[in-house]
Image 1 (cartoon, protein in one colour):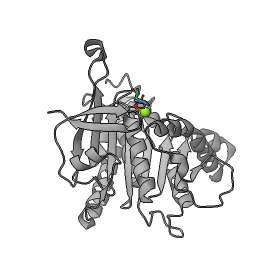
Image 2: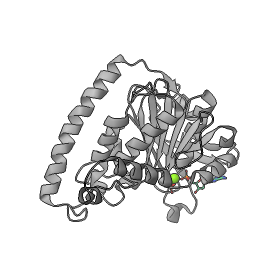
Image 3: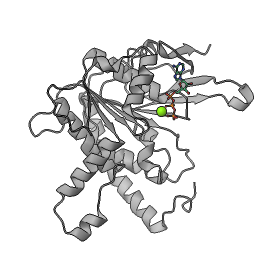
Image 4: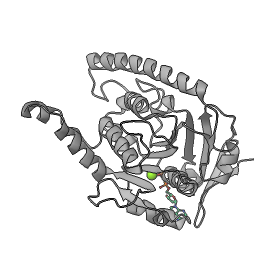
Length: 309
Ligand SMILES: Nc1ncnc2c1ncn2[C@@H]1O[C@H](COP(=O)(O)OP(=O)(O)OP(=O)(O)O)[C@@H](O)[C@H]1O
Ligand SMILES: [Mg+2]
């Protein structure tokens, strides 16, 4: 990708590169500290074959990037992860920029996961909460609501406010929305920022936040990780496109993730059918299967894996 394509000047690129360096340093420090103190507790992915391939599940507190082209099963993988959480009694935060949560519920039901058995709260809803929900949903309307709230909360003159109006798809808006979801789930200590119990966080997808500025993928990923990476939060982050190493900034999300599930399919024009695959490309803190799996998405069952050989 050339600098021209992403429409950034040399000066802007240099500035981002400097910011990235300091973010990288900050991230390294916080991750190393957390890692040394951490025992590896396994968190189920909701897919038995995948849990086995990971020696029990993903390490608690990890950031997992799910990369792949359209229709490879990324969103379904997220549904299984959320469903396993609900069944285990974990509070769930589900950010969906792609689809309405109603459609996710409908799709999940086809695979035998009935989200409506649990208390669902939409962050954009004005409804008074009577009970603590099991799952908080943040869709584009929820992000819009939070963006308005933070724009209005900054005391400033009209001109500055006009210039700095938070957008629904700003990383800062996402961070604030996640924090609000933790509050609603009742997992924060008074005035605290880190959940006191294990939470599952799903962001489907991150690509929406850098759709018009792919060169910012890595910077935004760092910003989010520094603000939201917590010992007690295991996160799935979907990225529609695996950024190639040719890009000015290398990999985006994959770079900062503790684990990468990569999904792809055979070229449909030559295979004349949809044949899907998945590989655990990386997973820090654990041994894992290193060969690809064949993926089948089955009615009543959802995402299933089979060893290739
Ligand atoms: N009820 C079903 N039974 C079997 N397969 C299904 C069913 N519903 C959906 N699928 C398959 O799952 C695919 C969609 O998977 P999913 O939505 O997880 O893809 P994705 O990787 O998130 O794609 P995108 O990048 O477009 O969001 C469909 O294209 C279809 O092949
Ligand atoms: Mg999807």
